[in-house]
Length: 374
Image (cartoon, rainbow, N blue to C red):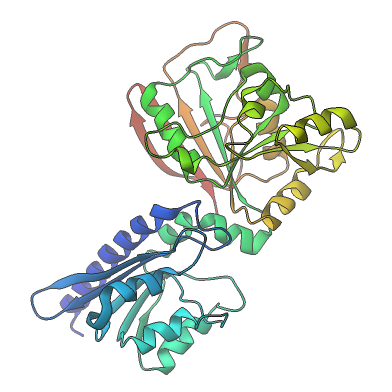
């Protein structure tokens, strides 16, 4: 292929892969143990490339994105190109692998992004395609795709969920004021962004101090997205969460898990269970919940993404354990002043290994996102 033609093809591949990655976000947080993958089927009959099939991993994890896209494309899949954000699966379950489905549909070219660390898939999906004579191009926008499905990749590699630490920090480096409960540090647009973060997470976690002081609900309160509220988790070793709290009062509508230890009062735990609260038996280390073991337990329940929202102590605990993968800092225009609770980190005190991946402005607020290599 001539250099100019190759450049045009590369640019086209990046454009459609970027669209497939955006599509994959449609079901983020809703696909159980499977990643939310995006697939586009694109053909060119001489008038330019045209998307003839779109697919995203179905809610619950099945069918896979390739199956959905091929079904939409039908006969138009023959001779077309498939853009897939994750290497097509190669293992047999009750349904044939997606790599075989692409072959049987007559796809002639596959452009892939992220590699799958699953031993049943890694390299094997592409091998099936190449053995069938399909032209395969790998690692197009691989980092962007991996970022979009970091929860799945981290759960596969590290046997725990991806942990995102979210902090709202005032102009003077505070996250609140002692004894005053919730203080509005950011504006309405930023708060809506936080609700979107919740909507794409499997679970959200706070400490018992924040649960008592702020009495939050931790649900998604955006029109049409209430059904995407994540499982709420409270680190509460001694089962002190009040039965009158908003969390407990809504436990039958939105799942609530309380991480307690053996020393917690048996009656308090029984009262919580009677209100529909799930209990997580948590080991204790140095007077605190053993976070690595807790995260392993969450991963075993199928959770791939965890949003940590609660309190300076909880944030420090996760940071000290090296369990944070993504940090989202909302810098508000508010000044807290005397009596403020200092943020455990800020832009000038970022842990080693994190890189700035993006910034945005929402009204008077500035938002920065930092990620650590998977």
